[in-house]
Image (cartoon, rainbow, N blue to C red; front, side, top):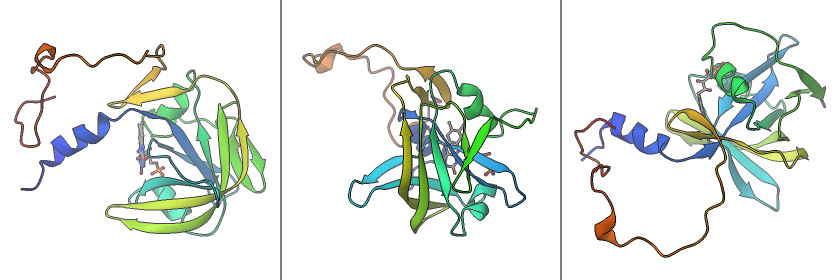
Length: 183
Ligand SMILES: Cc1cc2nc3c(=O)[nH]c(=O)nc-3n(C[C@H](O)[C@H](O)[C@H](O)COP(=O)(O)O)c2cc1C
């Protein structure tokens, strides 16, 4: 049985991620960017990272050539970048950025990977773009975290402990793939 699309989306959005902005030249001398939480580490040798880009995104067309792009990792105080580059804000401005090797990179993020396209894989309505990291910058800043589309700061470390007995868990929050309840 096919999973209800809304339930599938909710299942995906429940997975907690960091938040990145993929930045690239807009082809008119400026910067274009898009918020992406699909960032993934791929390989250490060669040094590869991936993002999954919707085929409908303007960024998809801009990333179809062999220009370099950057994956900027947002820090906990940079939720505004996450909203801005997801086109969630009406007001438009020019976020501070610098150009490195012909690639626009956001200023003051907690780190970035400057990438060259290494491969692109068919992924349904997305393309899985694998990039080889040419340069990297990193800090020990605290990350921005995303769960169900909402941005958070990282919480306290959790000590390893014994799992709760099954019976102690609430069944109120259980959803199966054909659940009818709304989140
Ligand atoms: C937290 C968050 C994570 C997102 N992650 C992705 C992603 O990994 N891939 C994607 O294609 N779109 C993702 N989006 C949606 C794009 O940021 C959004 O569609 C954006 O407007 C695309 O910009 P563009 O069309 O100007 O390229 C995400 C949005 C948010 C708010």
